[in-house]
Length: 366
Image (cartoon, rainbow, N blue to C red; front, side):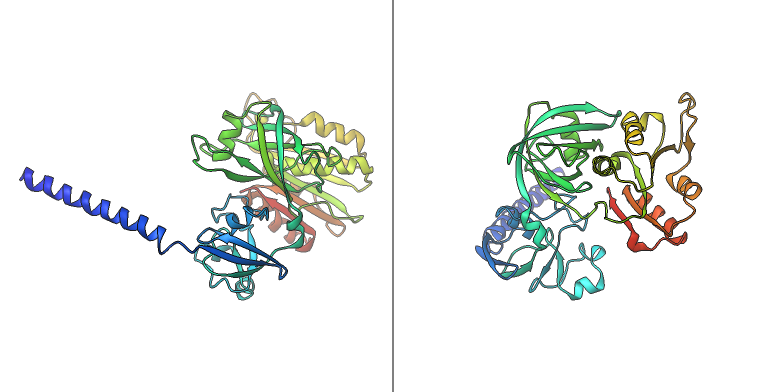
């Protein structure tokens, strides 16, 4: 009986080995598409290695497409119009409206380059650059949020709109055998063109956040590309409502720097949500903005203050504070940044109050 069992195990092992060899052979033959031509915006031709995701193939030619998830198909940012890209995969459908599907929009991280393609890329993405920098300073803002300040080396300066983001490159290390990118909003003053500041929250076992919180050191060389995004302060004379939570503070802080330099006179309310006192940070910086901007008010709120927090400020979810603080929306614009659940709840509340959706701008930190 034992002999029969051992023979069965041996047969299974042999079958598994054969299947693995067949998969390797298929990858080297059937999956080898050679060089493939990609036509960009009807005027530029690229020759890329076939079989790769379009997102990665374009990156190798210094054409950078935004992707907050690093190409895993879980953020929906890397949309491109592809003239002959075929039907979207099931992994793409949650991110594509029926109109986008009919127009040939695909997630570039999910579309493998197997034949010549004609694609359309937004012109502003073609100005995105790759930057070499070094870590100028690291600072713990809370137990799980780290401030990372990067000094630019090549190119030595960057131009960005307050509210935009970059894609930070994580080199291969214990949690990843290849470089990966993750998106982070810029928190610093746009006038400080020689450096940028990021606020990165630790996610257990997250490839990038683990690297930043556990491995990154001052003086280390780093790379990133950008800037990206259309989350920025619109020019108008409307009142402003900022709502953020956690590291969603970053783009709002950059916008406040911009407003302070411009001495922006718009009445502004900033509601920042946290769980307990230990989750609050940059309070003194916010009070400084209140001093520099007479019509600016900062309201931090705690949803579950600890008994020893000694908290006397606002309590409840950010939506509770929005409900109490915002009554008139006819002259309001809203800028929201944080978790998808928080943003969706705020959008629904503001729409119920009568704020048109076209005056609600947001950046979801998934």
